[in-house]
Image (cartoon, rainbow, N blue to C red):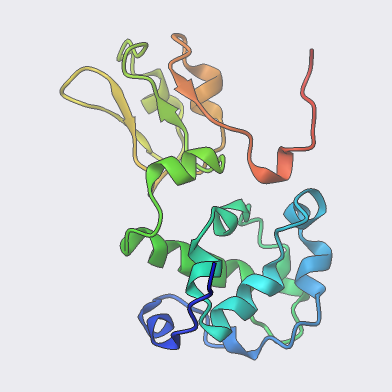
Length: 180
């Protein structure tokens, strides 16, 4: 796969921190990143540099951007105040706006819960327990989760009495074995 290096697209990315292009690849962000510890292919400094170089296919050709947990651990350790988590968030917003990411990509990356309409009983439990206001009940009689509001926290999954909501484990939890 050939990497596209057309840099003009990066000018369309809103919300980038002013200092985003000052990264000199020291690795402080990578050293503290909890996702990097469990997912070898994820590296915040590589993502920031791919953006600086305009490597659009590298950034948007996989679910890599969505592996970031947005924990913000990288922000205070960066000596250049690049704010890698904010760079990644801005790139995610761009990807969503430009159709470079969809709900299936987010679901597979463990960043979006999904409702099985056939199982949903429209009991409103998910609506009541979600601290972010992501679920709503559609006129068709089942819940739908707004990807822009879902934080993939799993509260709705845990509380759904019909077990109609599914959430894949996020990248930072992939190596953990839960219970059983």
